[in-house]
Amino acid sequence: MSTPPAAPRPVVLIARHGETTWNLERRMQGHRDLPLTPTGVAQAKLLADRLRTAGLARIVSSDLVRAAETARAVGAATGVAITHDPALREQDLGAWEGKTFADVATFDPETAARFRASDPDARPAGGETRAEMFARVWAALRVHAGSGSSGPLLAVAHGGVVQGLVY
Image (cartoon, rainbow, N blue to C red; front, side):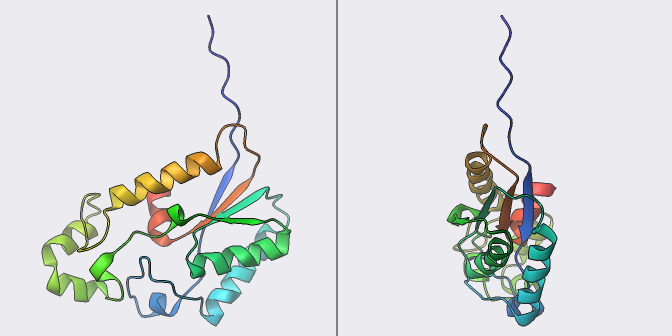
């Protein structure tokens, strides 16, 4: 008895949101809800121009404003509706949010060293581990890019999410 072929899955394109002031200041954003800078808005428009003829079937975005604004630019250029999914949020960095990595290394050196070494189980105080973030992101993408769904799909998320998906 042979196994039937799996239903095709769509191509998934992954984009990080445009620049924020905290990106410029090298502050850890996590779940903090920050808007794009004028440069970030321009970056979102460049992404939209690049994807205008990509034949996107769907756009799914983190619900945080920096990702949602980026997705909105692409949606406006392509006419594709956006689904917002909080499961695509950046890692919850708890007490680290708003701090620079140098700040964190001063008050939480052990966890900071583990975090820098990409330890998936390093937990910022009051936050989540990378392993927890990756689990929720992968679960969301399995749904959005499930067997038989149409594509291509654009997922607009955050730096930590993108790193987890491509490394």
